[in-house]
Length: 329
Ligand code: NAI
Image (tube, rainbow, N blue to C red; front, side, top):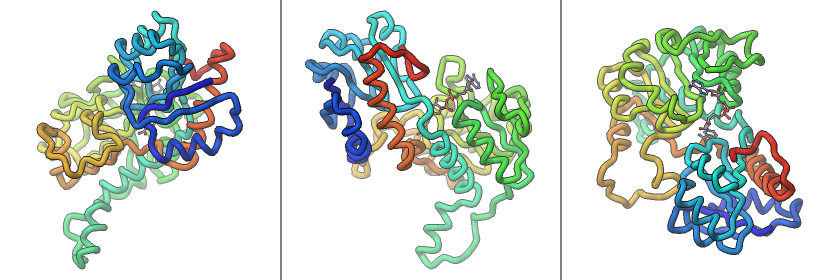
């Protein structure tokens, strides 16, 4: 089974290389190129391709892959908002993903961002390095006995609920389905109630039509003054321009983002020498209470190992026609 691995990074080669010998039937070729309509044709002669969060797995890409004889698409991530699922089904292609590789890896980063923006750790770090031992601009709040509002209580949201409980917070949540595993300590409320009551709001629902721009100005106005917002899920859950308006209204104590709307094109690239033509992100970064990381929620040793193993198992399952919870199409 030959698999073409798009947008391969050094860490991918390491984590997949470590587990590959357990899958002797699989042969992997790694390439730097991102998967998009133009590069899909490179997959001619392969049985499967492997892609990540910033790939364009839209209709045109899928059609080209299909025309090249590729019938298996393996997403080495949990989210699949960048896959045209209807088109894949229409073509009869198999698309699999890695739904729950390590929920704690993302949830722990979400709490890390919450703490970092609350206590301005990014500022504190730089101040001390420059012999500035003053406390100006560093005052935060306790999380203990405050309210954490978790939007989406699937695998990652549930891990975040447990972390917040560990901090001694009251935990409330909004989801279209209630997670029975959390019923002992999480109170489910409506989205409006969550927005109105939370001191920390953390987003853990998928990006879909119904969740696109769920954090917009109308909803920001419903939040408490001095709220902390964290998004480690998908950038477009938040309307960036309206978030900027909310920040200017002094709504937020802090905003921590591992994902943001403009991230495609930036993710895992060194663009430090580029002059950005239009960058809403740059405007966001100008605020002292915003911290942005570049989609690193999944980036722990444990998560990478689980992603590699599940992706290769997904390929074996696809070959054998085994369907399970990892199937997108
Ligand atoms: P999951 O599928 O286990 O949980 C998602 C939860 O969101 C479910 O409980 C679902 O009912 C809920 N939900 C669906 N529609 C909703 C709505 N309209 N309002 C509120 N809740 C809604 O997914 P998991 O594994 O917890 O991942 C969550 C998201 O985290 C993924 O969709 C992905 O976008 C993101 N992610 C980010 C990573 C990073 O590196 N920053 C890594 C992995 C995932």
